[in-house]
Amino acid sequence: MTDETLIRQKFGFLGAQLLDEVLASSKYAEIPAETEILQEGQYIKVIPLVIEGAIKVFTRFKEKELLLYYIREDESCIMSFAASIKNQPSKVFAITEVPTKALLLPISKIENWFNNYPKFNSLFFDLYNERYADLLDTINHLLFNKLDQRVLAHLQEKAEISGNPVIKITHRQIAHELGTAREVISRVIKKLEKEDRLVQQSEGIKLL
Image (tube, rainbow, N blue to C red; front, side, top):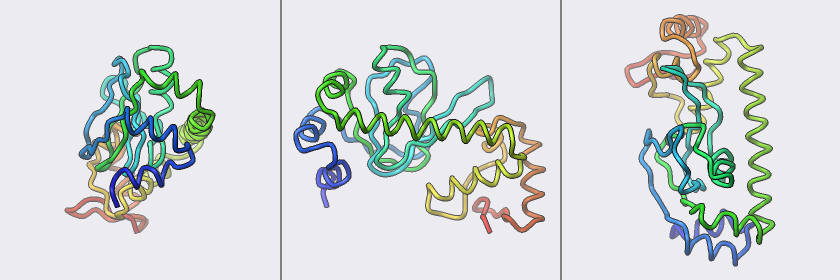
């Protein structure tokens, strides 16, 4: 199956005419894992529409990060979309979580598609609702869940995205992504290991 055939199958709901314009105007990209594609303060030039893989969107303060959401297959980045419409710099960072295939939609075309194609509007309004739910879930985790629950949920989400129960990640990286200290994460991981929720291996952390 060619990439264009896959794209037309995945995003057929947009309609043939819009898809023709998207394919003619957008750039197809295969992006390695852990590649930074957006920085805070950077003006948006393209908006990724993920075909396969996942992109991590987060905010950062000093050395601490806070994961906001993942852009998964058939999704795009609503915060990049909002910033591009208002011609404002990005307020977030974005890094590929795993090897990712994406269409890079040029912002020069976004307003026209937004005005002329209801299905394009629906795509981003639906994504807005999903991201809003993700952010509420993040806030609930921060306010109401103990750190061990947050760590386990974070690792489970990473395993789901990668399709592998063994997550290649350091304690420091987990700490950065959850906005806490490495020493705290090390204690939590040790506790979860004693509870037989996970095991630490040379290949990474394996969920049980």
